[in-house]
Image (cartoon, rainbow, N blue to C red; front, side, top):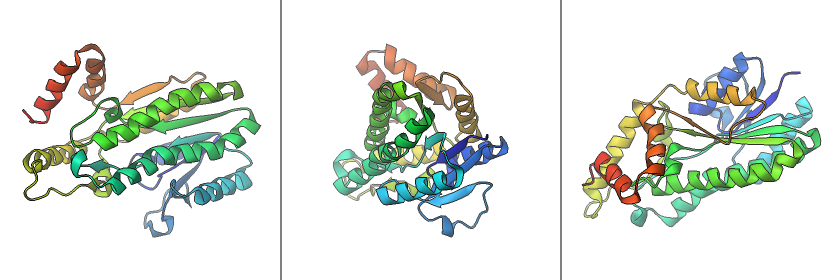
Length: 269
């Protein structure tokens, strides 16, 4: 029987690329979107309404899949939002919303699917995090924190669920050519702000990196590799060579030396 796969945030970007790729591989794919009826494009997989911050919508989507397919083999936690800004000037409610979507949201979905996977005596959960979650990046500190929290929690969760035959893995993407910047919360570049020039320049650089990013089908191929693996790794990194190498540098360099590299990269010194 074909594996049944659920991808949160499947209507665009990385989630859409994964859904299309896995559909071509003859998996039974369901994606989610907060407003699937508003999507003009026809996708090769079913889109269900879900907001990962609203538990009832999660339960309804999963119940629909179980009712139609009788099982759920793979969850890909992809739904997320971007957020940029000086930490001092980022509204607290926006910080909370970022954690609600990027951290609590995936946990909500994992909690909802685990009883079904436990009954099946097996399943796979893949959490899409970020290379930004391996380091505190200037003017992306909140985003980095949400993804770092999910990375670490997955490490613990993976050990807790191993006894039930359930596997978990993280995939940390770098910059990919998607529309994430359009949906990202940007703290405004304020007139008179002490961060105005530095933040404005960094914001332009971040958007340029996304525009020149990798093809998201690379992420889809790694997801397929994990699905077909008997023993997935804990962490996967996907992206440009230097972005992946930055994680290695953080591990081996003294803290201040690494900080100086970031400051120079973002033209903050």
